[in-house]
Amino acid sequence: MEKTQLHSLVVLQVKIIYCLLAALGLSVIAVLDLLESKYLFATVAASFSLGLVVYAGYLLLRRKKRSSPYPEWLLVGLLCVFTLFGMQESAQVVHWIYFVPIYSYFLFSLRVASYITLVYSVALVALVLLQFDPYLRLQTLFTYAACYVFSVMYALINEHNGRGMTQVVHTDSLTQVYNEHQLLLDLNKEITRADRMRCDLMLVTVTTPERWQCLKVEDYEQRLLYLGRRIKPYLRPYDTCYRMQNDDFIVLMPHSDEQQAQQLASQLRDSLTNSRLQQEVIGIAVEAYQPEDDVETLLQRVQGGSL
Image (cartoon, rainbow, N blue to C red; front, top):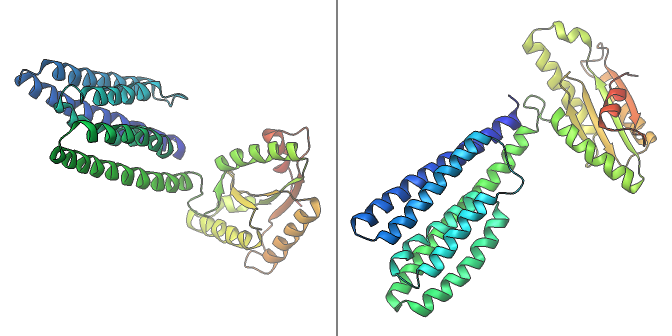
């Protein structure tokens, strides 16, 4: 399984577990309300619990991300409507408002959840100030603010970890350059940009010797690591280097002409000539993007020869 698939699977499993735990908590609330003869609140809690269980089962069976998260919007929307209107009927509903920011920041991205909770918080504060007595206002708003801050902190940490995970997913763990999966993504964008802006796009390939395939794993990896380190110092700020699945390296040079690509190739040859790899047969090829190319044909041509 690829790292991207593994990461998506872990995120899906966490969301399923969270929904089931939340459903369990709501089930406990429903039972307590039922024991206190609060049948309406027990029914609402049980309905939300059932909805979360059904949604968790839906995620488990489908196992892929949707383009439009309608169930999340429905659950959060119903929760917001229930709390804002329910608080006008009974103060017991106030305990539900603390669940809104926590659930919103878990289900949605940081930006979307911030919009939802901001609008909800404005309406909530206005409602609390108008209907609650001073002591209950302070207690309610303080507890809600604490839950809100906790949710934002969770979202910020999750966003930071997500970016770090994305970097790991798209970076080769040995050489610390990007992997082939990232090249396919970047090359597609750069081809689109080159067509739109009518600018040049160059690729430089560094081909590893075939005899390296016969080396021990430790020696082979040491050579790949050393080769990657010899390439990186000569890259410009907007050049990117990738390790392919066949262990060749490709340098993507956007907004560059053939002269600039040949200059990089010459620098790499000089660097390798003056290194401990000087006895190795390492091919270096330069190829330009042509208007009729797509990602597949361009990569086939790039990896077809060396100079």
